[in-house]
Image (tube, rainbow, N blue to C red):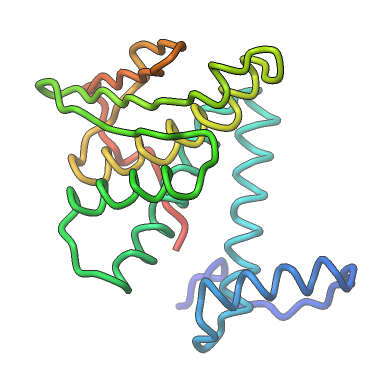
Amino acid sequence: MKNLLSQNKRVTVSLDTHLDYEFRKLASQKFRFEKGWYSKAIAEAMDVWINYNEVGILTGGITNIARLTGHNLWSMLKNDFNHKYQHDNEDMLNDICEYFVDQSPYIENLDYQIQGEDFLISADTPLITQNRDCFMVEELVDRCTVPLVVVLRAGIEDITHNTYKINSLEFGESNQIHFKKINSPLSTIEVLP
């Protein structure tokens, strides 16, 4: 007997034309027009929406959403880099650190160090820290710290198969994020297909 929850259902919805165009453009890039690409993208979007509302609204927290987002972004970046190169995971982490430096106008130097089972991420953000009259601490957090935390923590967890928490944050000329290994299994994170 077939599981009723695993059956596909055809639905009709009405969307704003521009929203549908932007969604299709991004979905076709991600799934490369493979068979069923639009359905896969819609299912992934619905799954993210459900997770966001269940976790964010019902429990009032963003930790699980940030982790889910980080693991999905890490998977997308890792997939993009795997098409260009065939690196091992540590090379992938190095390449993605370089990607952050290349793509962000706020991050100049980005490095990580392994300290036993813990990781220390260092990021220089002189545009923000030297121009304090123009930027607020919130901008440092929003534009630099949060993206680094969600993506790089996901990468570290993928490579080590361990779970990490933020042990400490230091802001200044060089921003440091210390991730501490915790004894919790990584199986609580569900990466979308």
